[in-house]
Image (cartoon, rainbow, N blue to C red; front, side, top):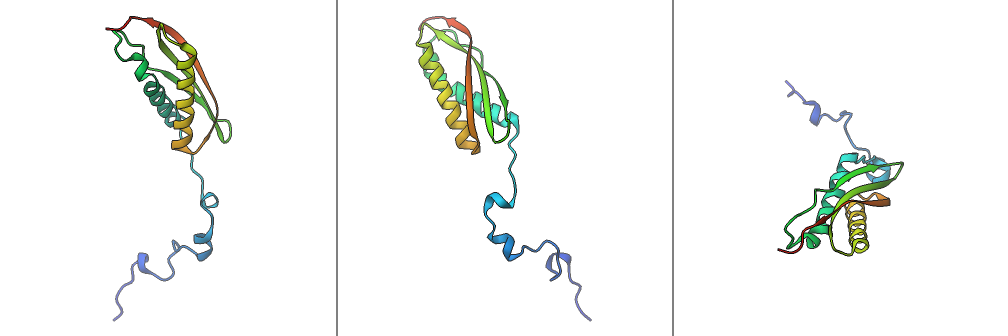
Length: 129
């Protein structure tokens, strides 16, 4: 009497990988879709990290960044609203935020960042402690 053969070990299994499929380049085998909320979370964290030094030693801190993203095709556009400490070099802080977001989003997702728009919603006064 022959032993039963399970589908996982069957020679005629339909899940077998053909040699041609193994040789295909990674980009040809499938597609990865990153959800908009993932881009937004990465960008928000990058903005917070970029501003950590600016807020250090102050009595009052700004609200967390608000982020929205658009993914038209294969690029991502990020819009981030931040509150910045005052007095400070606002242009330099905005540049640090923009560069950090572009580097983190691009580096972690592999998606090209087309534009990062930094909107300063409010200036927070409250000098050093």
